[in-house]
Structures are given as C-alpha cells and as structure tokens.
Image 1 (cartoon, rainbow, N blue to C red):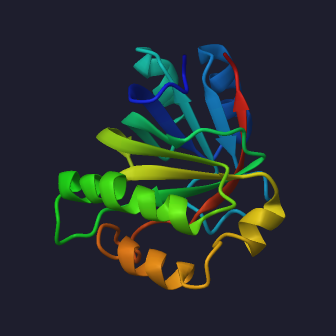
Image 2: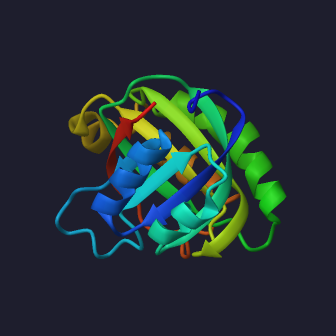
Length: 187
C-alpha cells in the first residue's frame, strides 16, 4: 500500500498538472498538485509518488526532477489541503545529518507546535536521478485552508521555535517555496 510507513518509492516533480495526474492514475500512485493560477514563482507545481520500476514513464513527466524517496509517515490523517515544502539541506552538514535531524528532532517539534496539522509525512530523497537537487519533501496536511493559513502554529512561541530548528538542517535560502496542494490517491 502506497501510504505505509517506511517504504521506498519514486517521486516525480513536474510543472505539468495534466501529465502528472495521468501518471499517478496509470501507476496507482498519489498526486499532489498546486492548482493556483499564480504558481510561476515555484520550481514545480506537482509531485507524484508511486511504487514502480518504470523509469522511462516517470522520466517522461519529470521535467523538474526524478527521485527515489523514503516515505516516513509521522502523523496519519486525511488532509484536505497540504503544505508541501521542498527541502535542501543546510550546507555545513551532510544530507544524512540533515535527514536525521529532520526525522528525530524536527518531527516531534512540528507535532508539538502545529497542533492543527492533521497529517505529516516526510519524503526523504535517497537518490536524485535527474533534475533539481533536493533532500526531501515535507507534506504537512490540514483540514482547511484556513487552518493552514491562520492556525499553522498552535502555540505563541511556535514561529520562533520552528524557525530556529529549521535553520539547523535546512538551507532556507536555497529551499524552494512551498506548494499548497491537494492530494489524490489512485490505489
């Protein structure tokens, strides 16, 4: 099953919503898409994850990047909207160090300070096959867009605590902006 914890999958980052949606359907995967009209400030607008060995089919849609990822389900839920944060690791540490901090330190902090977050998955990039060099994708799910925009932090010190911790493992200058995505599962 696609959303089991601790599974390796393929991920495709793309600018083509229609091709990405069709790919997710064909491969019985998951489609994450940002359908805002003003998305051009982002390097991609869709992410597709699937368990497959058909690299040729994936590469045909991966105009931004093609990755092997390790899916870590931190908090299970059925979100209506997802803040999808692409991650580039802090340059003074290795990918492995950044990933360990993200998993072991940041994940518990995120659960504590994002009380309205109904779902949280980390997609750790194990290998970049092609395209944009990224270290991971954080999928932070919420029940409403208002929860995402107005109740992202559930504690007054949340913005400071989370920002201080993110600087320990992520390169904020080089990490692309977040997508505001919806999720469609085809399995």
